[in-house]
Length: 363
Ligand code: PMP
Image (cartoon, rainbow, N blue to C red):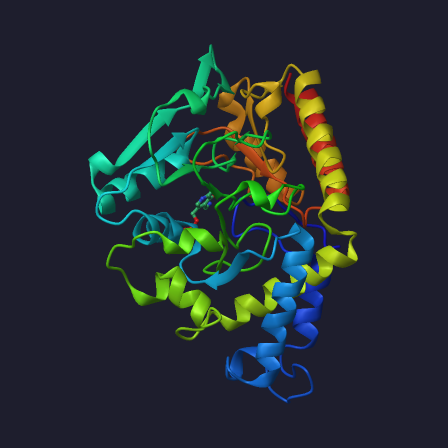
């Protein structure tokens, strides 16, 4: 492990073992004498890679057989529009729950494409002083016929996570860009799950879509063919040339995750990492977290220095000590430590040591 710990929210650090393997086979993949990014996506070697990637992802997430898995272009935001164009048609309506920056951005995109009247929104954040808490009303009491309910179970910018599975009368569309495979979930409770790859999967640009077969019958809007789920399914995610190197790295991350014991095992480590950091923040009156206990993100730990005048000094010294990308998103300020699957527990423990030391010296 190098001396730098990268807490970037995304593109985020990838497992060291995966990066070393990619490096070792960069110029000669699979004995072909060429790199994986220089071969046809339709070659039998690459097709074998994609088949194995899907098998591994299905196993890791226990994806039922009536769900399709797509490897698509366009990251997380690409799916903001794809969901609308694939499911809403001219007159369908959808409900969007808003719990932070990304769910709000999804609403903006949906309204742009479908029009205001097709998109209903529900703010599910309650503020108590500076503290944010998620509060979801009984959705079954809303007398509406929505094609889907969209929500973001982990708000990357705000450090807010919804751990309970939703009880929804409509198919659930979930943006899991920043918490996919961080903990076990029951895929059968969702209509569609999507995730930009650059946190727990691989390089940016790629996105993973897991979609229930029956949703593909919904009326579509005219759209770009490469974002059409039905065409994606029909062509095995190869309607056009896919981002092959990103797909290869994703396949390697899946393999690494399986070798690490799968999602259940990684979840245990993630829980320890998050507990270690939150417990320290709570125990030290130099720092504070502003999210209700039950909604604190396991992947994106946001925190503030009580004396914000020390922010720049904190960032500077952290960087010099090897802890990079701790600055919070510009829209919310403060700090953020993103601790995705690839971040070892040791990285979090060392960060806590640094934070304790910084607090001691600046009290
Ligand atoms: N949704 C969430 C939850 C995200 O964290 C992000 C990116 N940080 C996005 C969507 C947008 O992803 P992209 O930049 O790949 O479009």
